[in-house]
Each structure stands twice: as C-alpha cells, then as structure tokens.
Length: 227
Image 1: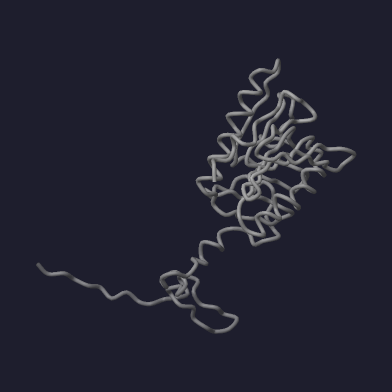
Image 2 (image 1 turned 180 degrees about the horizontal axis):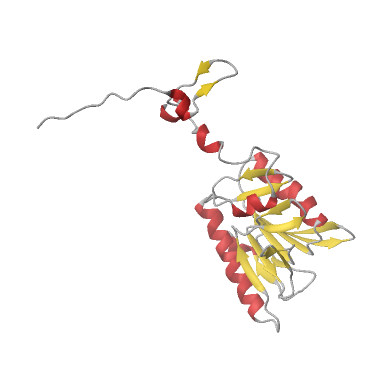
C-alpha cells in the first residue's frame, strides 16, 4: 500500500497567526496547553475577564462548582467535604420537615442556587428557605427569608461565613441567618434587628431556637457526631 503525502504551503496569515503590529509570527501551539500541569489559558480567554462579567453571563455559567458573583467578578469556592455535605443535607431535611407543618410551607433549597442579594450581587447559601410569595428575578430568588451556612475550615472560609456574609445578608434584609460552626461545634442564630444581626449561640447540649418562629428548632447535639 502506498500513501501519497501532499506538502501543504504554510500560510500563517490564513490562520490569523501573524501579528502585523510587531511583525512576529505567533506559535502554532500554545505551550501552556501542552505543558502538563499548566492552566489552559486559551479556555480562560473564552470567558469575560474579572470585573467585566454581567449578571446574565454569571447566571448562564455552568461551572460544575459553587460560583458567586460580586460587581462584575466571579468567585469560585472550594469543593465541600463529605462532612460539610452531611450537615447540609441534615439541615435540609430538618427545614423541609418543619416547613411542611406550616399552612404555607414555602420552599427549601440547597446550593448551588444563586440568590440575588442586590443588583450585581449573588450568593449561593448552603441551605435557603423561601416563602411562597418570594419574588424572582430572572428566574432566581430575589433575596431569602432564611439562610443557613455550614462553615468550612480555613481562615478565609470562616471569615466569609462569620464576617462578610453577616454584613451582606443583613444588607439584603434576610430576616434570619443560621451559622452551623463545625470547628466550634455550635450553632449561631442571627435575627435581623434594625439592619443588623443579633446572634444567640447554642452549644451541643442545647436546642437552637429561632426567635422569629419558636417552632423552628433543632438539637445541636444531633448535628455533630461524638468526637
């Protein structure tokens, strides 16, 4: 069997690989693509640069990760641990059971689900409860009635849940914010009072109770397995 090989002319201009301004021919192969362990910068260039994302572009992003949005910037969060997800699902089941006893159950969701806090600001709480009357913007909830965050290890992660989101959820006028603190093995229940949260801390031997609705309560000890 004979193979005929035709030599093709190398016309780089046909592939827009020639930079006329510098008279330099760019490499046909991006070394960042072929070098093992390097980021694929060509893929990154398919997306808007930080600071120029629109909320519509963010909401259309299918990253397979938790991604939050702030004034043109996207923030990709670390993947949660199995223990984190165990707590999230436990809280979901508890809130769902509680909501079903109400005359108007509302809806309970877990992340990923973008929640609009204000224009150009979206967060994805671990667990969120919405009253049935809660409005939507672009198909996603506009604010929330209750949010729950399960803390993750690390200084930055704890600051996000214990400091940054406290201010953000208060600004968004979310009436109640529960923090499930894995490290301290406790639950903080924040009630919005005049634009700021007043937190009550519950230890493992106590029952965490909502001051807005006392029927919303859970044994803290049930959340954390014996050390």
